[in-house]
Image (cartoon, rainbow, N blue to C red):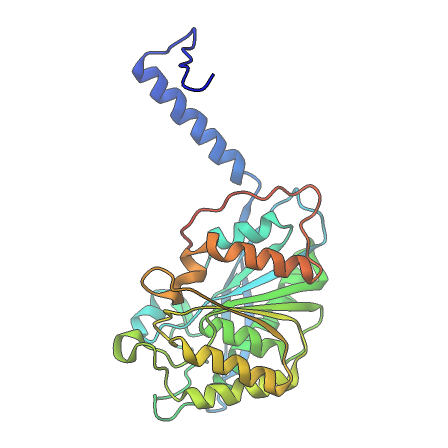
Length: 316
């Protein structure tokens, strides 16, 4: 009955109840993530920087998987962004995006997260410097990233027997989002879709919030990308993006479409203090959009998979 109070026959003492509750919670958390395995691969990559100089090295690729998933499993590559500050790039020791990866693993994917050249251990081998604010070379810098992403996808397929050779999705955030779109222009084998979160370049919220360097050049780069790839894409931005603002992403998408590209553009309402952080910390916000997109592009959740409620905070 509504309002009736149910009193259990057995009422443990306060300390015992607390311990029992903690034990049950720990067991539930462990079972929820017990199937997710994290491994690290070392992959040799080679590319050229914006000046045409060869840059090469061995990079760490964090791989998440669940042995219970159907194999061969489609691959998701998640690509990190680029800090405007050198210390930020140096401190990125190994990109993980662990909570985001668990979402994709729950949908049946093997997830690979490369830490590209110029970040963390390979800080000195920066292949993605696009130049000063008044002398940008976006196309070359993004191509340097795209070449690495393509090589990592090939390596993961070669080194992981559970990775599908012909089914993959490229995902990226910020510079990694734009680099994911750039990767599509290379026409990588077996890639069916791209998801771009807050993709772009030239932003710096410390010095020119919401006003990226030479945004017209970035628009032309996206226009050229649109002419070279017909893969279905999902682009997700927030109106209060402190790197790129509200207007330039709209114009970049329009340029991409003018070039011939196809992207479902979603500009969401302001998110937290900086919409640029949506992919990293707003998993509950973007998860329905991404799920809908994956369903529509041939990556529906396998029958055995159960969607788990995702935490609201993400990781690198």
